[in-house]
Amino acid sequence: MTPSVEGAVLRAPQTPAIAAETARNGESPVTALLAAVLTSLDDSKAEDTVAIDITGKTPIADHMVVCSGRSHRHVGAIADHLLKDLKEAGFGTATVEGLTACDWVLIDTGDVIVHVFRPEVRQFYNLEKMWAADHAPARAHG
Image (tube, rainbow, N blue to C red; front, side, top):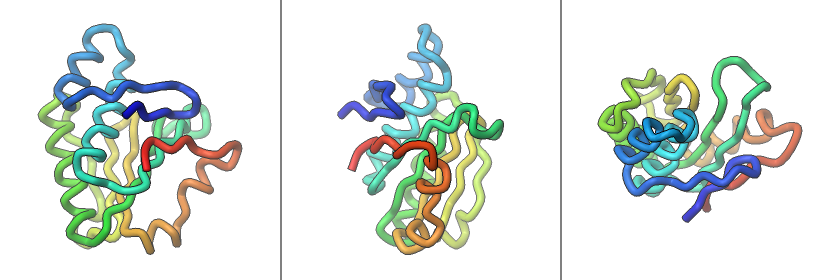
């Protein structure tokens, strides 16, 4: 699978560890980080993953990724797996909020912000519509 983000094609690596190595081999560190995030979410069976390029829209990050888990337990597992994968890949420790309730977990890696929602909570907040107001977000995978 080749996820796309706002027209740019990202080739997601086989493992997040490969993503960190790719960044060291000339690929943009942000692109490698985003690819590692998307790979981890895919491995965790996250649903309806959307990657939005927010470069220039806000100074807080370059990309936002929004996805869903089927239940509280699935949301927590997706977040835990992502945090472990990013740390093992050499991307450091991300800031996390919402892990105790697992309705909406926010993971801030610095350049990529990840939102993992239960479907009802995601629909209520509708972040994709707010952040992609200028144009429709690219679907990373379905």
